Image 1 (cartoon, rainbow, N blue to C red):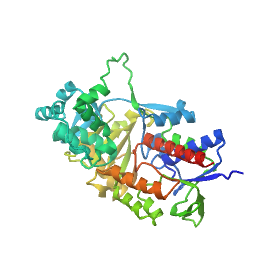
Image 2 (cartoon, rainbow, N blue to C red):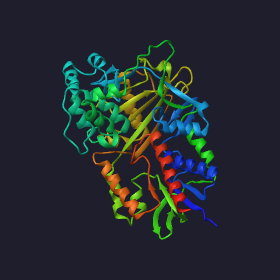
Image 3 (cartoon, rainbow, N blue to C red):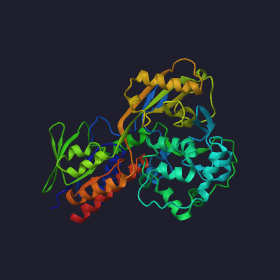
Image 4 (tube, rainbow, N blue to C red):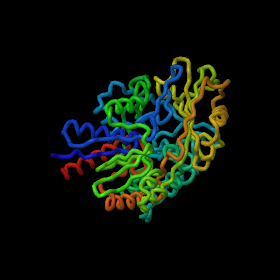
Length: 471
């Protein structure tokens, strides 16, 4: 008689939920002999994904969308059969705030990196001197650097400081809540290094890989963008996953310690309970893992992966309070601007389902790498700072109808130069000393929601491979 393998998933963020879902699905379809348990330290699953409803508004306290071009998210949506609930963002003009002045975001770029010459020459974001320097990318020789380098140093060498500071940095540093001059090129955007190596130029590489679209607009209707969410917000994805996993999830169960035994693992929980596992999928933040495996000294290398703190501030208004309304979906802020916010999304314009008629909803972000203490301020103090910054641009009359401040303290893992080496060394130790222990999540191989869904799916496959090889 075959004994069921016991699989414990630690962490109920989107990585853990995805792993549990795909495992549970395969268990049912293939009748695989395993028991699945997901332990979550808090009273809810979903991690940073958290949608709330208030006074007719749909508010995302965490991420607000999924990226369409990464297939793992839509594959999960299709597997869950919730395509009918999907909504797409409305595209519109976005802006960039350079030295306290809003400029239209230059076109013909990918992730802020210029692809086409004409839009670069027409850009108002950089000077004529900066444009000439940026165009040097086309003729500049390849780098002889072979080891990891910062994304900032790579881009500065190819395009010059002005373009990096005024266009590339606000977008990429904003996406990753980090410092472009410390981010690992190989861990985050190896595609740019590959373009330089294969085409001799990043711009030439972008032109080859992402040719300009020849299609002309045939309709005056707003076009839909490359992001998607759901009618009732991203929480829909979490709720549907949770409903599929009834009886598998245990809430308010933090793992204090993990002990390797001859026949598997003992997980000591905060309530004194001990769980046995043949296989563990560890999706908890990397900052927690060394404490759980305190007897395994090499795991302390994970402490060398930094994590930044951020906060977002959601503000609701009557539309008539906005005295200088701008036609667009939001703006990014450069480091050389005298602002503490890093970006602002005009949510009611980007997502039609988020605000009642006649209302406006904004979401602002704070927590630059050199302004981490702002996250420790009170809600009122952070909101006052955000309103002061917004009023420099938008001229808002009166106070918001309400505000929602959400903090993510030490929650955004940073892939600094050398990140891949740390991950490789830790995983090599795990492979040799902790069989059946799978280390995954946003701390290692990609931080976006589609990345995390893919991490979960891949981890589930690793478990299945292990079980199939031992049954």
